[in-house]
Length: 240
Ligand code: UDP
View 1 (cartoon, helix red, strand yellow):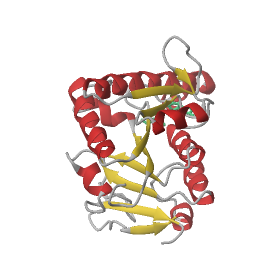
View 2: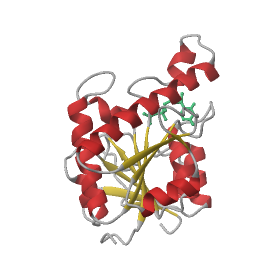
View 3: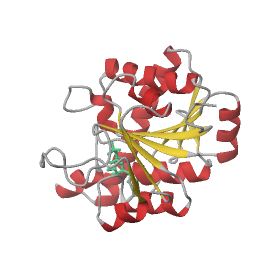
């Protein structure tokens, strides 16, 4: 068991994490670096579920803003998450980490469908399970997908790796006085509309008592530090 006391976690990474310094798409060097972070987390003895967004390739809202049918655009976004999942699977396997991808949109020749009991078996065998295509329905995001899989797989916590090192009371990029919370309650996040995850994802975690740990994945080694209880992060929970 890791020093944080968690046995099984879900790690959610936004698609943008895979772009590196590019403005679009998948930067293979960056994917390899992130895969090393994931491997280090796995090597602490954790059971690891992974959800990766698709924002580095396509977001349904952006397509809809340009006149596309929203549901159609969202399906394209979901397909983007499958591409990211396959890129991460490849990078993890190059590091010797056994991995399975399960997609909420069935694609038999590419990856497995989401089957909870099968996912359990993979985790028991020490494999990382990457859940792709979010919840498999339009008008949702991969944040909701991450919260859903975290609940379904009974994860002890949902770790959200982004480009910001936690949850602030204002946008730190715009307000120099913005303060980072060490801990904050789900209710406060929802009431004050703090930028953590979508409200539906936050509510699902609140109702199932799954803490969300928000941290920066940009600094090398940070995930392992946060997992060890060090490092900079904000913990969102019912206990705060
Ligand atoms: N998406 C969806 N349903 C889901 C998950 C994702 O429709 O359950 C679509 C949606 O268009 C979203 C896109 O996939 O914009 C990419 O996911 P997301 O925006 O969550 O990626 P991230 O911001 O985490 O990179």
